[in-house]
Image 1 (cartoon, helix red, strand yellow):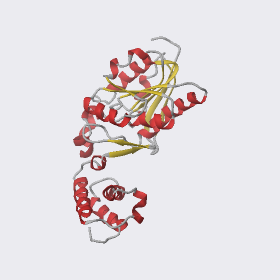
Image 2 (cartoon, rainbow, N blue to C red):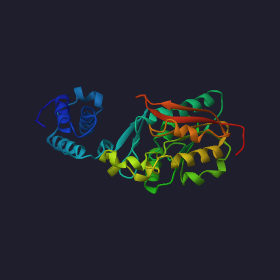
Image 3 (spheres, rainbow, N blue to C red):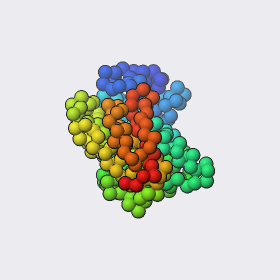
Image 4 (cartoon, rainbow, N blue to C red):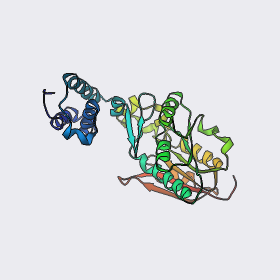
Length: 288
């Protein structure tokens, strides 16, 4: 970095270093520079020039990012809807695609809250707790239970939900929360769903840095979703909603898992890029 160089110009130079190595070099360069300068990305234009130490740190971060280390591991944070969550090695980094999944759960919880109900929401495979944090941020007063089986991820989840009313449970979702059977209004989950068959086609950023157990789910990617259906069927009250993210190749196969008598109004939904991304279903009055 040239001494006295304007931050916006330096960010453009940083993007050139990242180009060809990451999917969004301009965005990543700006976020890294704002992290180093301790300002919001939108405030870079008004930020002062970097100190020599900051210049050196920015150059180091650009090289590390170009090597494939996730941006969020370098900044220590990820933004999800309106909330900031801390992330790092050992926990899955929340993706923008999941914001629509969270939105469906938030919409249902908000609707219940507006008529005087205190909705009970269970997040399975909670990871960093980003969905739970967004629920509490946008629907104050709802009860949230976040379930996560991995010990490292649970530590991140508890850190991000500390000081909130959320309850974090260190449990495998298959046997989780039996005390809530038949009482839950919304079950929301971003489970592992990437097919092992495509592992070699994924970016090294995913295969080397995201926890494998949070990414892959058998050869077809559907093993965890089968468990989600069983657990949601057990937890939800009649009329309760399940919201489950899936791979963009599962637009037909994921909804098919929820086609039994226990479910009505099963529908698949597309993300902002138009790809099949998440399925919803309503718990019917039928037992079993």
